[in-house]
Image (tube, rainbow, N blue to C red):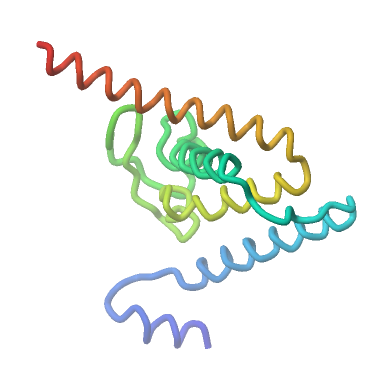
Amino acid sequence: MLEKTEQAYQGEHRRPLGGYLGILAAYGGTVAVAAAAAALAGRRAPEGIGVMDLALMAACTHKVSRRIAKDPVTSPLRAPFTRYEGQSGPAELQESPRSALGELLACPFCLAQWVATAYAAGLVIAPKATRLVGATMTAVTISDWLQLGYAKLMKSAE
């Protein structure tokens, strides 16, 4: 049935629907495990998310997603599922996916949901450690913007 659906969906294009289905199942399973771990630990979701938590979560999600998807140092994690194509920006790589998992690992937009979900689970299970990680990655994000701004200022001063 999946093969027939895949063929009808993709036409001339190759789309790994079976791989996507596996990723969706893994995501759902991960969320279920996190919810069970929280329940077993007697933890509950907060009544609301404050502005500071949301800001940390957003900046941390951005930085961790890009770090996993684009950083040269994390390329060994992506290498089995992607193909190196060159540099795409300051300290970032461009890679093409070789599978559905490659699409996930090379796409910061795709990874963001996973990272944000992990951060949300962390706020429930280990809020202090999660906020520390969030603050650290937020500092790295701000530092990146400052580095880029500084480089642009230096270039314009020449």
